[in-house]
Image (cartoon, rainbow, N blue to C red; front, side, top):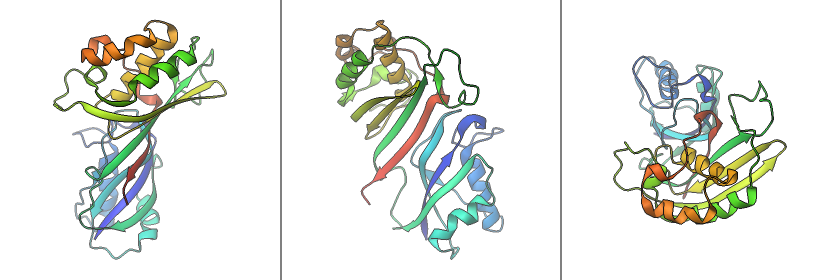
Length: 246
């Protein structure tokens, strides 16, 4: 049987999601827990995508195949017993054998949190990017409108990526102020490596007046990483939600 799970994790002490030799990763911890449940039989999990070192997840999705007859609603309790405190299985359900957590994705939502406090809150330092500079939020929102839609986002991903097709669709970009924090929300059909972090860096440059709002279309058309803003740190980023047709 195939099981779909929604997992949350605090990425602070992980070298990312994907298994890496000699490093602590989310995938490795979940697979180790599944191995214990399956009497030391290895179980491979397949996720909706990877996250980098320090990046968090509220609603990461993965699937795996099992021959255990545990009721679907009991799987979170069974797995969480063997997982470290910084990973929590939130939901689980049995799905069709053809379901794939990565290839069946219809949209993803990422959120990025900026702290504008003059002095960073020590208790929030791992969950937001400290950026205590004045920002023109109206300019950021206008620039965001240019980024929405279907574009080649070559200017907004790492130059060394081996992905050939860099066309993606961003459905919405929202910016909300909550106390002394700014929360960016990006929803799209998919995102390139470091794309959200580069988009945020570019929008912050717009907010500081370093990039004009009407320059965004030219940056997109240029398809050159050197035209866009810097890559902001991973610890402010959250994979918030992954959506499917069913």
